[in-house]
Image (cartoon, helix red, strand yellow):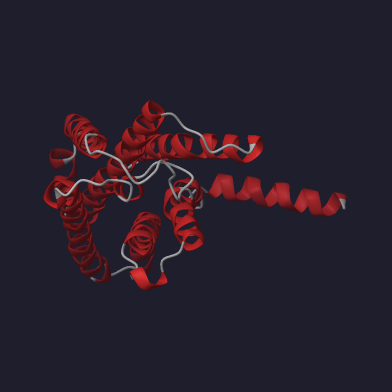
Length: 254
């Protein structure tokens, strides 16, 4: 679990560093300019880290499933070599997905201005500037990504159904509590990530507005990566004790 948490933290850090520094620069210096190559690089990196997060969350769900539903086979199914292979596959598939999206998006001709309605370069906003009539080419990869994301989501739902069924069969209350405490942080991260992403991209056009699009983009691109470390850190008793000591010390000083 901690091996995959390291990779998840790297993907969170990467997605934050891809969008937030440029947004802060634009806010502080009151400029929204970004070069064509810079926009392409930002899109490539953002799709890469977001795709890696989806893949890693799916792999971590499988890790939780094996550890709870098939604990005697855990060492065989998820040895160090298997974990390394799954992590490498997650990063490789994410890079391939990002490369295809970036190449497809920036090969389209853009004729509807050069102003994006977001604080970073993302595929839907760039497609709005395209005057290409090849709708199959424009939305083909997006449809594939949606299907892959939905497939990962269905796999997670199915896995957690099996996990909760196995946990409820554990006779001891302490064992059930330990199993739930292992799964709930991952389930919270998955719920936060998918709910914000779906809310940002699958909203009715009738309620779409620049300010709402901006708020939803911040919600799915910044909030989940920022909260993931906090959600997983709450399982660490030493960290919770240190935070509590720090807070009580501050209150006592005042």
